[in-house]
Length: 107
Image (cartoon, rainbow, N blue to C red; front, side, top):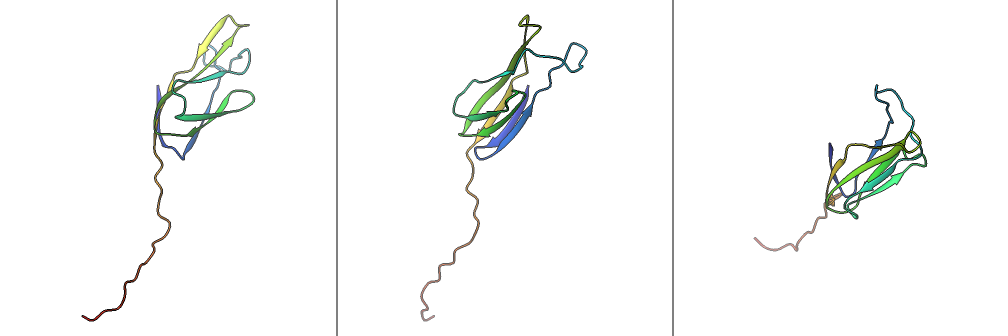
């Protein structure tokens, strides 16, 4: 199982490669499906062929993403290993320092 830790303002890409029993490129019946077991932690942007998904962090939490497909005219059900994703809240990094100068007084 692959594991990814990311902030809620980050993203990563997953690309699937269907393989046969000899680890050569294989055929699947149609676009794979993608399942996220905990809604709201990430959002998936899936390509039209289903082989690529951009995973966008949404909220702090953990989830598993699992791709699955069929091959052999529906005779074989195949799944990828779950991807465990841990999302932390995005930090709001400082971009400037504001200077507040007090009044001049006697020492």
